[in-house]
Image 1 (cartoon, rainbow, N blue to C red):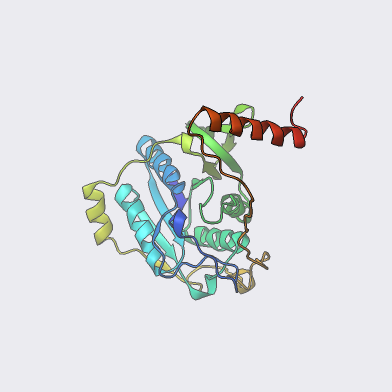
Image 2 (spheres, rainbow, N blue to C red; image 1 turned 90 degrees about the vertical axis):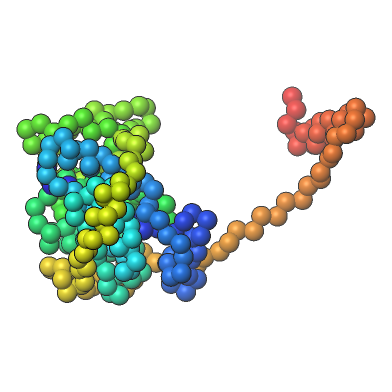
Amino acid sequence: MDIIVPIKQVPESSNVKMDPETGTVIRAGVETVVNPLDLYALEVSLVLRERYGGKVTAVSMGPPQATRALKEAVAMGCDNAVLLSDRKFGGADTCATSYTLAQLIKTLGKYDVIITGERATDGDTAQVGPGIASWLDIPAVTYVSKIDGVENGRILMDRLVEEGYQQLSTALPCLVTVVKEVATPRLPTLKGKIRSMELDIPVYTAESVTGLNPEYLGLKGSPTKVVKIDTPKVTRSGKMMAVQDEISLRSAVDEFIDLFEKKGLLP
């Protein structure tokens, strides 16, 4: 079973900053990590490989330093890793990103299933996974909480919905996005870390990927644009009441009751 896992290197949650000119995330000089939700996709992919054989290939689109994320995936147990990196890809929105990744997957050749995390913590859109499936014209199943197995060319799954769970299956090849419930990510092993250090990760550029339309690439090829970035200002007028004894407690309670009466909140 050949599995492809698109992963992303994202800024640590406390370090996300936006470029006010382009409306894109500033990545230069920012401490980054593997998108935490992609670790669940990696884990369930490794479990499927252990059960059915085959190989797991991690792919990522980003600057050269994104090789760190791919090496972590290899240290966890992935067989191969591929980086998609070119200045022409810079500033891509979810549509341009999913298009470029889909073309890379076509270039890599045969696959049975693509497994992604639910979403990336920097963009928080959950659009890239389904977007890849759309460009590849394959079925997509989102919010999968459990993969039960593969039978007769179909993958069996439980899908998380508001009312509980759906049990469903779809034909291979397909794309699946998974939620945290699907697995507990393993830690990289020493053997895996050594292998990741020795592995030469191939880098694909715009010229390396078959059939790329330059009109769909990067910021220029992105149909959505951030036109304005604002930091919300929270202004609240309030009064702090320190309760130190019974008298101050009664005073505080009286003020609360008076406030609720003025706002019509008391019956």
